[in-house]
Amino acid sequence: MPSNAVERRDFLKSAVAAISMPSLVAGIAAAEDGPAPAPSDQITLGCIGLGTHGMGWNLEAFLALPEARVLAVCDVFRERRDKGRDKVNAAYGNQDCTVHTDFREILARKDIDAVVISTPDHWHVLMSVMAAKAGKHVFCEKPTLTVQQGQFLVDFMNRAGVVYQGGIEDRSVEQYYRMAELARNRRLGKLKRILVTLPVGEIFPKEDPAPIPKGLNYDLWLGPAPYTPYTPTKLGPQQWRNVWDYSGGKLTDWGAHLLDTAQVAIFQEQGGPLSVDGKGVFPKDAMTTTATEYEIHYQYPGDVELIVKSGGTGIRIEGADGWVECPAWRQPLQASDPAILETVIAPGESKMWARPTSEHQDFLNGVKKGKTPCYTPEDIHRLSSVMHIGNISMRLGRKLVWDSARETFSDDAEANALLSRPMRAPWSLKAAAT
Image (cartoon, rainbow, N blue to C red; front, side, top):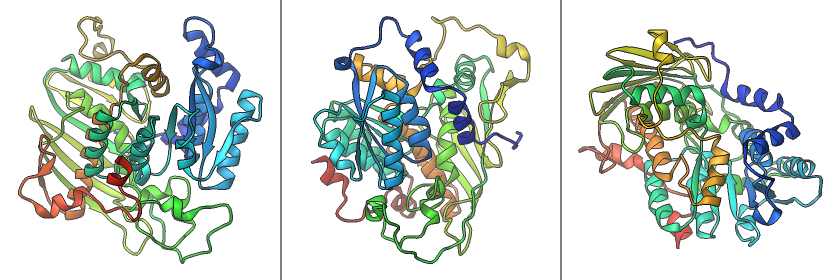
């Protein structure tokens, strides 16, 4: 598959920039029946985390939806939260948006219905649980940090009585939806293999500790992650993804998108593989502590193999009767026979759900209408788990047998020990849930 892909975030940035806020709002409003909702009918939001994705994708999207009203923004960087406040006030033409350093202030507010969590990965599950405990509906970016955290998330959200939506767009994107639809409806015949390419990871050199800059609450940025001295690069846009304490590298970043399509295509969105065998290159003496180059082989039920390699942003699904491919992020589909792409699948025949307008609209629909959003806690957990066990296999350097029903490795205590990670005191999932 070609590796000259447009970077996903560059694509999102250019796409958002190409549409002015008034025209985007008008377009969304026109797609909904009836007049814009009265303020009393809007879902009030607090946005936590205003980095590249939090500001340029999630905040932009919710500001454009008339059913939502952003009341507050939060970030540990003063500059980011001030920019977020100014963006919200400019969109609404007032000065009402409040700013917060500590997300717990937003959770304590009675006038906020839901939170939008766009923080680094190590905060996702803990913050989601705390928000749900406070009675807030939750829109949270992918992925989880560990398999154990994902299990906790599913169990807690099933009892919390709030709507949870995973923040990932692929089931709303036409190309990936269509690929999964063709595969699930046997237009490729019996599925045999799925090939996924993900970007090569960056290598950042080690840095000496530096003074914490004014306007940054570094201890709150770390939160439940192990304490390490402040160094500037690791807190840069997306650079924390390369550090094991906070994320899982390109595999858990880009992999969340393309591996979701892979699992949906084979009816495993709430299942998982039978085994994983991964090899990765881990930089030495660098800030980067996740694999930068990798090849991972998963074996799934039905004798389907999933192969993940570094070097692109593509996905190809192969069956006995043909193949379909998206060669790079959101690029036009290709197929072994162009007729495959033209095949008609009647609504009553399709084994796919209706394609959501967007993950943001899907969340609001869930809150307003009591609908289950497209990305449930179980979906996000199972998607994250396939990536986590890939990372574990690479770190141990050997093939592992995975029991997706019990969510453990078979007869491998060393691998099972890596399914969880400790949280830095005083942060605790158990305490957050009680």
